[in-house]
Image (tube, rainbow, N blue to C red; front, side):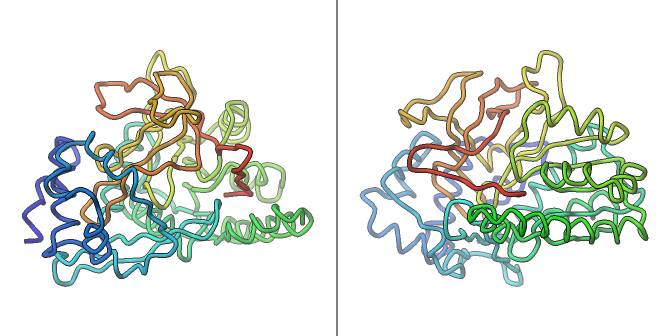
Length: 365
């Protein structure tokens, strides 16, 4: 049974499945008592609709509008599909807790495919591979980023070093106004980065804009990194156009700079290759159709925004490993018309959504 949907869930990366075929396969896989996860099979008993018969296309996912999901409370083992092939191992991954208790997902292979696709886009942009080593300065531990970067460095033929960053502790320090403790923690991170750079041949790094700015302010670390780095992936926190220009043109002009938007729930939306006429210096491309992103009017969530209009992010995840119904996210972004006939929407200018009742502490991640 586990192979029945392979042509939809795991086709070659250059052969995207039809979105409605993927929706139907996801409903059948996750809600069938034979293959579905215990969580979704049990939840479906209380629905006013049958996902396997009533959800036949992307638009039908609106039926889940009245199905709240608290990903921080679900026992993770209840999310593992019963139809998974023998021997397939799942990992449990948590969000950074920017908006409350950490959310949890399970993943076996879907994130690897997402990262394989990201690596193809990096190839298009001339990102380095096969020479030197990689350094990740960011969350490891329960966060899926460690798995993603391990996979990415492996695909690009580079050994990977890690300097761990605890985003929850950083947010706590910032949120409580403990700026001196926050600065000491960042210096602690950079001291470890310096130790790696002094002894290892680091050509590629992945980290956050705040850490890149902090590196630029510490000459003992900046001098080592500027000399060696040839590729930088940034993500995790928002970055305005002027900061992006500063990092790209003044701090690290010899390195290829590529953004990556995403989170534990949605996966990675890497920066696509710039094209003439782009209205933003960095445009993100979600892993469509497995991750479907829409932007809606924050004041009228039923209204989808037009091209070049800002809206709040809504994500849907359709994979064999887990299913996320349309979910309003913490971010706002600007919708961009897709380049080169890409079927999904693209995004730029991602930043946290702030309202009278919603506040996000970014910290350094």
